Length: 429
Image 1 (tube, rainbow, N blue to C red):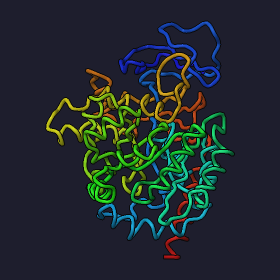
Image 2 (image 1 turned 180 degrees about the horizontal axis):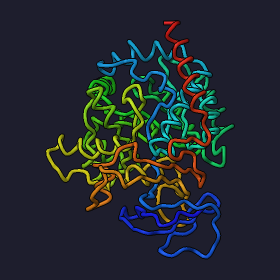
Image 3 (image 1 turned 60 degrees about the vertical axis):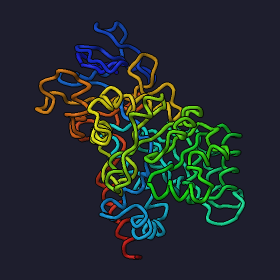
Image 4 (image 1 turned 90 degrees about the vertical axis):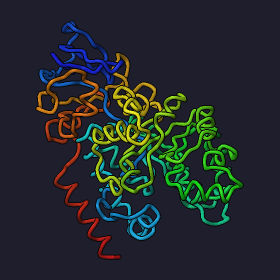
């Protein structure tokens, strides 16, 4: 495929106008000012459009589309125990499949090409993602409230089987991560065993860390003053490539450890603000050279996958919190949303507008009132754009969404089945 006469946001997050971009074998094959000699097949007229990297959502629970708007105006623990956990106890594979499919449709609508997920009924998630054509790092979340050996826990057995059957499936669009839910939902023995297993197979780790002040301080009380990061590090969990979600309450020593261990922080600004958990210290994490990415968390705490909205809040929340208008720049935000996210998922050939990288691209309609004038395109994308500006989403060189039309998802059926599954669960509560 060839994009003609299109503006691009290049690998330095700078605007280049009237460009040609050729796609071949899932990758970006040509970027230039002149029409290439090679025939790339179908063409996309790019006048009035901006082509850029798609977004990498690095912390989500996709099937929780079923709980959109279900638990509102509650603090995290009350939200979980009074609304979320009782609903989730009634889930089945069919509900998770359709909840995931709905999340993939919403993701494509808002330019998300890849997601890092933590949930269960993961085989049903795999089926939905494979059909939708998106990318996903799926982790079967593991909890342990007993003294049981990790190898005797059903969730761990599911996680092992998932990794063996589906890691790098669907042309490597689907990757399987190991997922320990959190410090407060496990014990030291479980953490050590998870750490050892993850390191042995060379997998990624995905874990919730210091989301709330209560979680952070109770961990210190349980473990002789150790924070969740210090506790996990001592038990070896951070020896593997780790994405730590939230990190709102991490301390200076935690940041030293995260830098040393190469931990990625997945900041979830809207969810953290909505649940009054706090604001992640993104400026300090970036100053220390820690890889910071952006996640939506689930739509039950967000309540959408509108990633451009997420980027705007990511950029401005720290400005208010730390009283510094220069705290997080649009270029830093765009890097967090694209290349940093791809790297956290182990997708080294993704998230960059450059020849040889996977064609995970989105096109924005920049001829809308909210885009005019353009003094700086990066500024406009982060501060002026909205999710509705996205006209096209491509994954591995295939257009999956274009101008309101889904190429791989039957939206009418997805809406019907999602509502049906939700009503069934509500009838059982």
